[in-house]
Image (cartoon, rainbow, N blue to C red; front, side, top):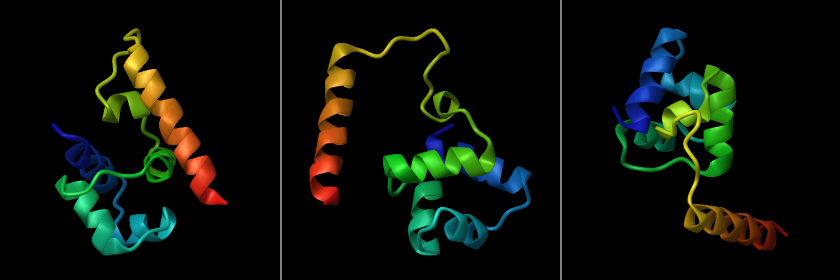
Length: 90
């Protein structure tokens, strides 16, 4: 099951519509639909909001085991993303 399917199942379990989720995130409903269909990946902020709203552990969505470690390359990528966001947010 991919991220979009997991999100869709959790949303449906909470009896929320795609439009409800889009308003809560916030984002437009068309882009939210793309996330559920696997056409578009959520941004880090969107992923954080989705997890908060649906009360999901991000490790579940990302298929990361509880004791699984992140590689050094992944850590460096996350640092680069954080720096990119920081510099372009201003």
